[in-house]
Amino acid sequence: MIRLAIGAGLLAFAAVPAQAETTVDWLHIEAVEGTAAIMEAAAKEYEAAHPDVKINVQFLENEAYKAKLTTLLQSDAAPDIFYSWGGGVMSEQVEAGVLRPIGDVLSAEARAAIGEAGISAFTRDNSLYGLAQNVSQVVFWGNKDLLDQAGVGADDMKTWDGFLASVKKIKDAGITPITVGAQDKWPAHFYWSYLVVRQAGQAAFDAARAGEGDGFAGAPFVKAGQMFLDLVAMEPFQDGFLAANFSSASGSFGDGKAALHLMGNWDYTVQRDNSASGNGLSDDQLAIFPFPTVEGGAGDPADTLGGINGWIFHRDAPDEAVKFMEWYTSNEVQSRFAAASVYIPIVAGSADSLANPYFKEISDNINKAKWHAIFFDQELGKDVGGVVNDISAELSDNAISAEEAAELVKEAVDDSL
Image (cartoon, rainbow, N blue to C red; front, side, top):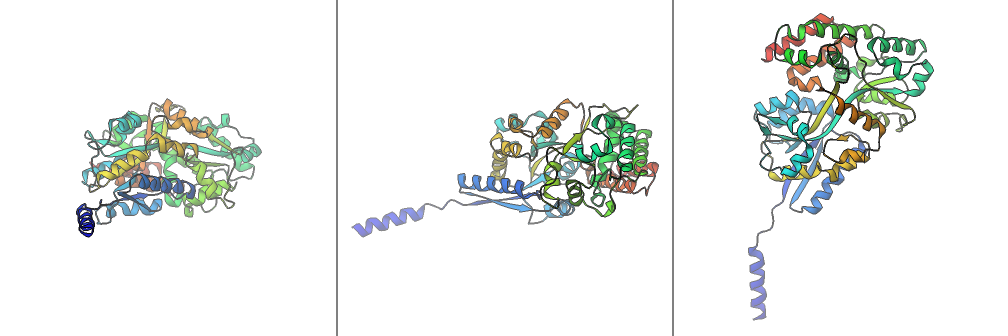
């Protein structure tokens, strides 16, 4: 009888199916070890609280990611969750049918916490496709020691003419004025794009992307290119800048080999990690400056260039992927990144954990901007954005005229319409 009872118990236990484990493939581009460690720890924490879910953390270097993602999303190896800069590239992914709408899974609380700007950035045709994680701004990072040696301060660089005069003073002092990773092209596109923001303004940009009038071949866009060429004519960049990538340029700045670096707020961490010592410039040595204003330009002087970045989902992603990312983008987790000075989270409350004074200043800048222009190489879509990167790299080498550069962007827009 006892054996029968035990046998019956075993049969009853065997009749209860084991809970199936769902694997969520999460693809990121974070190359900084400390930041990646926070991400991986969060994945482990979620797994411990949800034993039926496995988070498979995957990494691709930034340039490889951009090059391979389109093909990857059409393959059997497509990730469930992957990084996105939003903009036109995401719009193209929506049109290609490779993304999953998530509005039916996301909670109302998560939607409210992310806020209107973040939700809007990842919404197309009233369907939500992603979760915003952080905001960013491109600024000039400065080495105070080198700027002091050259007798240059923040007030000297408020206007474009003042900036050019400052570059000359820095160079005359025997100091490399600016480091740039032109091999990757997108770091060079910050110059042309910011000058467009200042010279043309939002209304002209929106009209040009719609193909109206002279489009990107119009006068303010040509003027922006010429202003970039005026800077290039001063030979302000480090030796070998055309062969330097973002990482090496950031490391060069962190090593104290140039006075300025035009880069996003992530450079605070990257310049340290890519420096020879691994320490980079200390807070006492660092300064940030907004991109100079342009006299007579149509853009608002407070307008900013940067991103609203986040995570989007492959069309075959399970509900568990959305629920994981809802937790990951919550204040509970994002405040960890704010406290570690990794980036500026968008979710409500997390910015309160920002101890970094530079990040607080950048957060204030974005809040005051009437137009927070999204990185042009993303906002304009892969094809047009690729041309923007190409012409920016060529302008940095004085290999193309301002008129030719503007016309090439216009042609790319015309081909896309």
